[in-house]
Image (cartoon, one colour):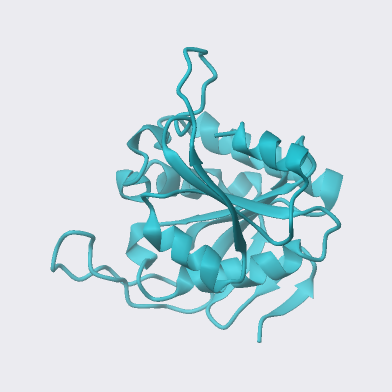
Length: 211
């Protein structure tokens, strides 16, 4: 059973989750700059440290506004790493205290939390994404705001995690790519939207438009 010492600090058998902080920037950048974390959307890979810095800034604003934001996911104990994707090579040991990813429940302008997670490939395949997502979702569902998650249809592993933790599919579709410079990279791809409750039509439409 997950335990927590305070709403923003979460703990599971193998993980500790704490609000993302400036001290995490370099480790977060390493995770988000790894091409292996972007197999389903290569154009999303981070290329500058400033992108991780913005993640921290946005997270701090969300924590201040809604009591939720992004968590740094760290290991409580050493764990054996999984085989490297696409090879038979064993992974390196995952050391206690290592940042293996980020879980998110940031408040969006449309009035819903954007739930998600991204973990380093070395930590895949041993249930850590589900473990982190389960405890983060429990914290997010204590909020008055709906919890929503957007995922590419071509990322079945993430779809399975969202289904496993109890979120419900509320929309599936494909957008139309535009020419605007701020057009999301996912706009023309088939996407799924999950939520922890039924969404009003205007809120669902706003989330669809996010790409």
